[in-house]
Image 1 (cartoon, protein in one colour):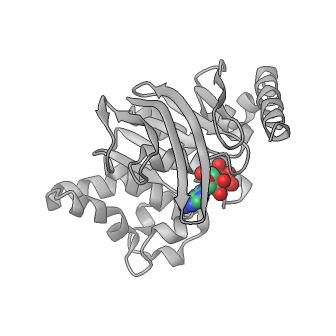
Image 2 (spheres, protein in one colour):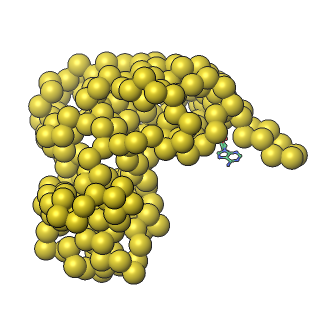
Length: 256
Ligand SMILES: Nc1ncnc2c1ncn2[C@@H]1O[C@H](COP(=O)(O)OP(=O)(O)OP(=O)(O)O)[C@@H](O)[C@H]1O
C-alpha cells in the first residue's frame, strides 16, 4: 500500500540547508499497522508529511497503491498531535467531522450516515452538537479521529496523536485505534516518540537514526495479535522488545 523508496529531504532556505532525511526505503502492506520511532528531530514528521503529499521531497519517491505521490493522495487521512489546532472552534463536532465529506462532494444522506457511524465508533454520539472547546483534550482528539474515519481512508497517517493527553486517556485512545484498525482494515503509519506505545500498537516498529536520517532497524513485533493494556504490557517479550528499541535509540543519539 505504501512504498517509500530512497526518500530524501533537504530543507533549503537562502542562508541554510538542513538534511533532514538522507535515505529511507521501506514499505507498508495493505492493512498493516506500522509504528515509526526515533530520536527527537530525526525527521518523523518530515517523513509523514512527505507520505501525505504535503511536502516536496528532494529525492526518491513515495507511492500509494502503486501511484506516485505528487500531492495529497485520495483516501488518505492524517491525524496530528495538535487536535486543538486541527478542529474549527466555530463549528460543532458534527460539522467538523462532516466538512471533509462536503469537500469530497458526498451526498447529504450518505454524509449523515458516515458522520453518525464514526461518532458512534469513537463514543461521541452525545457530543455531536457541542463545540470542540467545550470538550476535554482526549475528546477533541477523538473528534479528529472520527473525522479521519468518516472519510473512509484506506491509509491513515498519525503524527504523535496522543502526545498531549493524560496517560489514562492515552491508553483508551490507543485501544480505540486498535479496534478501528481491526474493524476497518485500514493501513496505518503511526509516528510516536513513545517506545511503549509503538510496541503496544505496531505489527512492526521502524527505528530511525538521528538526522540525517536512515533506518536503524525494521523490527517485527512478535506479540500476540490480540492486545490489551494489562496483559500485553506485562509480557516478558514486551519488556524485551522495549529494551531492544530503547537501546537502539540511545545508540542513535550517541552517534550524533
Ligand atoms: N520547515 C523546515 N525548515 C527547515 N528545517 C526543518 C523544517 N522542518 C523541520 N526541519 C528540520 O528537519 C529535521 C527533522 O524535523 P522533524 O520535525 O521532521 O523531526 P521529528 O522527528 O518529527 O521531531 P520531534 O520528534 O522533535 O517531533 C530537524 O532538524 C528540523 O529542525
